[in-house]
Image (cartoon, rainbow, N blue to C red):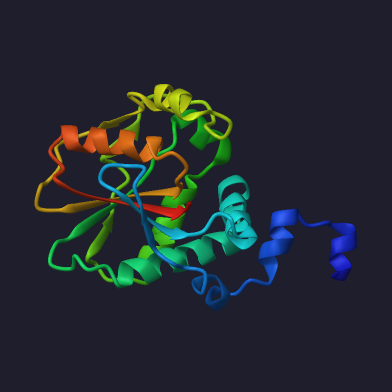
Length: 203
């Protein structure tokens, strides 16, 4: 234990993550396709790993720069090898409601995406304006699937027409039932998005 830990005890997740390097974290990236949504979702990391859970929690609830860096590296690693290069792509982070964003002060998925794109070329464009959360939803952690579907119904709307020439890569931090991402897809398809890729950092 470090000396300062006696004076300022670290959070459990903070302790788990503290000595994890970018290389350590990238070794955990194993993209998989899961079928909870239509289209299917690509998942990058296993949430069952304590280091992944720690990174997700530290980013989401504490705005940890180290967690942001690790998760952004994983996202950038995947996007760098993305096979749709002829088509330019918008990166769409799942938006938070106004109240939750005000409470946290940031959208963790947006912060991760922004950092990931710093190391990539202009093929990917961060778009935080197209998709808007218009319904303040309750936390989904303890809800069963049916309740999650009710909770997320009509949660998102698109602010303008989509350009069918672009790919829309919608990103969330954790995929559980896929209800959040599915709600986002529905909103984008209503405004003409034809080519949508779903991506979750962990599952």
